[in-house]
Amino acid sequence: MARRRRRPWYRRRAYRLARTAVLTVVLVMAGDRIVHREGHGAGTAAPAPAPRAVEAGDARPGVTGPAPSPSARPRTTAATPAPRPARTSVAPRTLPRSRATRIVIPYIGVDADLMDLGLDSERRLTTPPEDKPELAGWYTDGPSPGEPGTAVAVGHLDTNTGPAVFGGLGELKRGKRVEVRRADGRTAVYTVDAIKAYEKDKFPNRLVYGTRNRPELRLITCGGTYDRRTGYSGNVVVFAHLTGTREPARKG
Image (cartoon, rainbow, N blue to C red; front, top):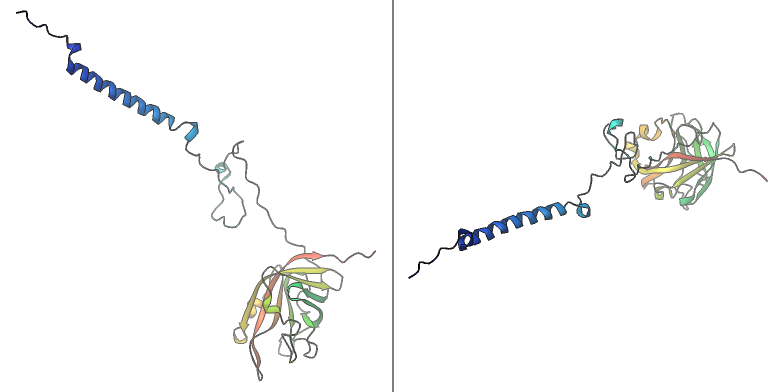
């Protein structure tokens, strides 16, 4: 009986299984490298850090802390245009002294003449006559309309028969306009910042009458509860600042 011939080692089943396993591992590793390399290509690149929106010297609100040095500013390229410069507001020019003649508050329908007011013997600000509730008054020892400092105008709230010149003062809103005309024909335009109510025994004199560098205006009338013997218990105060001026209209 002839002896069976042994197969070469490279044709044995064990070798073929081992070779298949090795090739499978190699192919899987190569495929993973390809996928990994394609996953970071141009189509799915991670976004680059956004350029800073605020540069040194930016005066926009909300920017806090020291400004970065010039070397820290982001470089400008075609893909990242430089941010627009911040807008800056220009303060209106102040006006020379001239007597106040009329006050106009369109939002509450005020259009009234102004009379001159001073202080009484106890150094309290006087008010317009009670029999002329349609008049408002301007404190003449303070700034005139458009001058730097704290100007003051007062008027009655009501009478026995109905509202007076400043009857709607408490209904004013922030951002509304107050115009004060002057004897020289110019007009000072103020914008309302706040409307506050105070009891007389807690009236903040320094806040209301204190000196300011820019032109500001206070409008004052009665407020609070009313008592026949003592009158009103408080005051309504409107705080405003100068935001513009107008020259007199040219004739012809």
